[in-house]
Image (cartoon, rainbow, N blue to C red; front, side, top):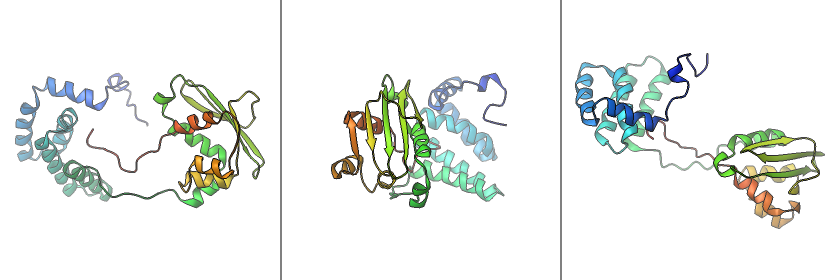
Length: 231
């Protein structure tokens, strides 16, 4: 019902790039795979080619011949697909192989209504998802967030590369940050930065200001465009 099909070999697989290099090594090298792939393409064995050629691309993303042949393969699968979403998936894969990621800049996809409707605890949960665990390794932080307009207090703690929050303020913290929810909304919508709001006085910090800087610096922003069929 989930990602694990019960086969032990699928329980802890290698990363795609590492696995691809071993697959190609076992299959006799890139050229050997390409020679067979061209023959199989002529036979119309597109589903198998999609499985085999992805290893060539992940083992050597500079192999333009393999990328083009895999793009041709995805196109053929897209043409044959009866499902509209399947067709879109195949053709998008072919596009990425031929053109890379789109250059179009997306200004913002977050709805202001969504941000305004989110309580701080939902935002702190989201921070936990976006936490860069590698950058957070070995760091310990505790910051109180006081929202006078909501009459709510939270303590956000960082330990063991995990971010948690509590609705019970702790006394021993690195800093206490006081701000209104509207101020936090503006920051999340990228209408202002933390430093902007600190300078304007809309955010007041009691304690170590660097603790807040360090905390928000560990929260990643995900790019809108990202690789799917290439490493």
